[in-house]
Length: 223
Image 1 (spheres, rainbow, N blue to C red):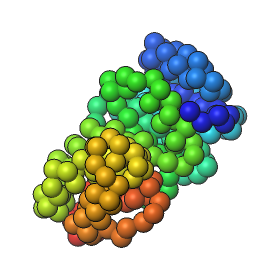
Image 2: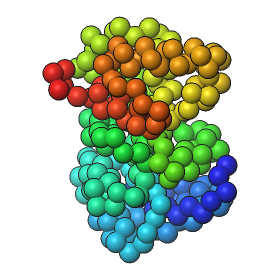
Image 3: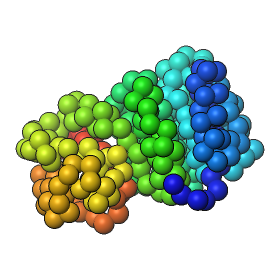
């Protein structure tokens, strides 16, 4: 785990989950600057503090629809140096596409129910703060299923889809190799095939390639 200072703001309307997240990250040596329950409090906390990272729920008061997501997008616009991790109970494909659109790093989308490994979760926070990405593989899977570019995605082999999902999790080529138990050369070949079949320009920046793929998957077929 990275031995660097990390300061976060946590926003979730569930007191139990919010307090649990605070304890979890503080136990990992991360400084919690504020823990709030709605989007207005989150934006006030942003104006008062200077966090490295914001952890925010998608649905918060008063309507419990997309207040958290809109706050996350606003934070990305007004505080471009702050990383944002969205936690959601559901796969909100529309929300994920909006947040992940563009080529900037430091954005993530994880499902609450699938955050079961504390060490992996904390590692995701540090990766985001460093400009990387952290997108749940289930989010990617459902984007793949719902994408208007289904014809392009149907061209991917099962292994290439696994590699694409691992890329979206923010894994490096070495990390993909370890996760899928394949050689580094095979990883490079599969990534090249993914880029070719999805008409994407290859890049050495891991988080940029992830966001490019996700933005592509959420865009109209003729964009």
